Length: 271
Image 1 (cartoon, rainbow, N blue to C red):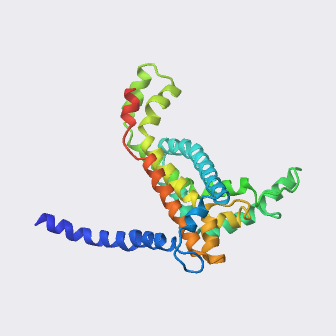
Image 2 (image 1 turned 180 degrees about the vertical axis):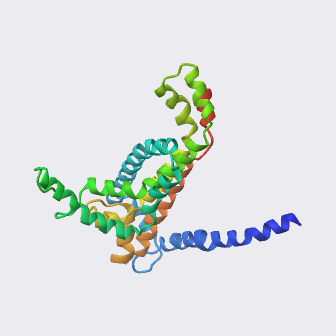
Image 3 (image 1 turned 120 degrees about the vertical axis):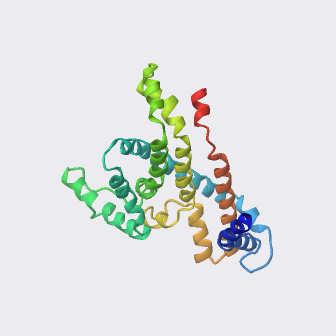
């Protein structure tokens, strides 16, 4: 009886997965075998391995990696400090709040901040540095991307730090470990699952960015997400757009497999 009840509860979940995960993927794979004239072909897959698309793929990886590294470098100390402060819930809320704002609104806000007559250039003029081209640069693109994704890096790391047994840190200190040694051999290994979760939550969406590449980078940064948008909305070559999406899905699956969230923290401590 209990098994039947469990199976009934699984029905909505299975329907959701089939309708909104499996079915869209099947449609994308189906469209990838047709050219712009609607004829069946494998040409799209051959075209993906040309230098143009390979360069675009490497560019996507490079920018996604940079965004992930900068997010991690900022998020880890931030999450660590959060665990030591009072009113943790309030600080967490302040970190999460920007993620509730529409991405387009945030992008336009940064256009105003980094623009020729924006706040940043006004400040530079005041201190005597002069007007600088900040918008439509790699710096502005990475800065805004990190700002947008950083809450998704902070939260899993914060949760991992909060779940960590503090007696292990005290034991390391009692045994003569330095602060850096304690962090390297105890704290970081025990929070590695949180770091992995945060890296996946940032790296995978960063691979397919397209709106920021237009509004903030001024099309100077071309990613796979930008190419998909161009093929579907501009050139109307749905087949090539779907093919890029297929490879993007494969890349995402491979990344998730390589960054598998296995509990290896204790293994590191034993070593």
